[in-house]
Length: 530
Image (cartoon, rainbow, N blue to C red; front, side):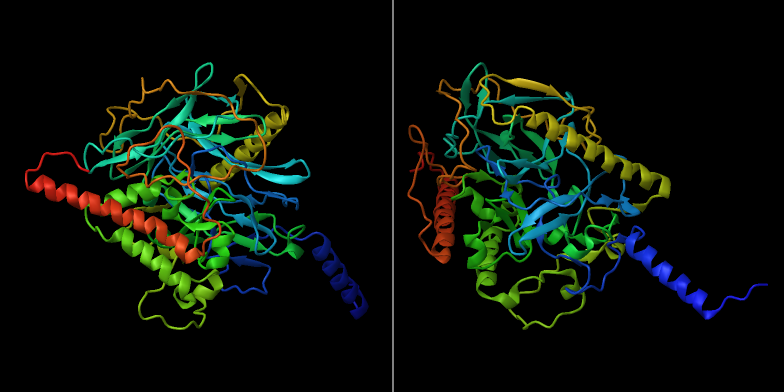
């Protein structure tokens, strides 16, 4: 037998090192819990919320964020073995999002999602547009059709809030919008009856390079019943090109605590969670989620639903929410951890006796074993796991198809609707069967038929990245709208602390009016409220 000498062994070791360097095996990440900023990746305890999980509403169809740097190639995701129980659960893969502070991209992890009944998910995408990479948002659309209709850009919204008092304390306001019927006509808003397990998303428009897409209103699950949200991840640049091929998320962002530290970005048109407190973030366009109604011309269905819910059991909920935000803005020690490693590793922080720490992130292994939660878990086999992974690939193909077809007519101002047929989305919610509102079924659609007003408007020429929003009244205000559009001076020159107090003063006056109404009702006064 031939003897292997030391020289031969050395050659074998060197060859193995070279092979490993140039042909690294795919690495599944997301399972490591003890990480630090020096490792190849950081699991974040703050960041954007996957837009298929929750989206802020906007009155205008605004362009997405644009950056100079090209996004990396998408990472292949393999869902974890633990999934929420039920056959109506689906996996929606993640995507890259721009982070201004890092001047780099972060990965928004995929989510387990129970889709809104009767709706399909159309994923967003990055596309090169006039020297920049711009994000075009995804959206939910009716599953009854695979055609997407592109319309001219609608005029600026005329929405200024309710024109009448609510029929009852269980009604919330659905804002008006422009609708196309040969030309644009304004459809006023209306009151809808709130439901404890369902959130109403009103009709709105989505901007694309081809035209604007009208997304009709729909019922979605309350946020704690939508599925499982996972933590975003930052992959350091040195490892992106070669090392990481597949990714399995393992750290959950707990929806039960999500809205305790919740923001929206007027720049990204995304919800954000975690530590975005402080004046610097305010100037960058990160605002507390309740503020979208006051100054930023938008609509947050989740906030209105939770405000309605808490008014029945905890009338101080909104005040406490605002006070907590103001406190954490001024006290850094009261803010939640920014990374999973700092939270899990027990990073030393100054103790805050007035406010408990917000623990947003938790291991899936721990969350899946907890009892009494709104989501119950089950373990699936590898065959089922491959099926869900395949759905991610199908969704990636739909994303590419959408980008290609929308860009084919980019830059052309359309004057008439254009319909384009797409492949059916692999992510869709089960069509409601049976009577609306029965157990497990969403309520019936609110009746907005015949509400189109005689106000007509011309399409708005597309220009600029987005239009600045004017200040409108609180969506529960009882003021009647004035003719045309309501405008107020810009508040951009005011310090953040003063700007944050304005919605509170309006809220206090609104609560005062409600208390007067209740007291008058009890005393038998049937006169009109002033």
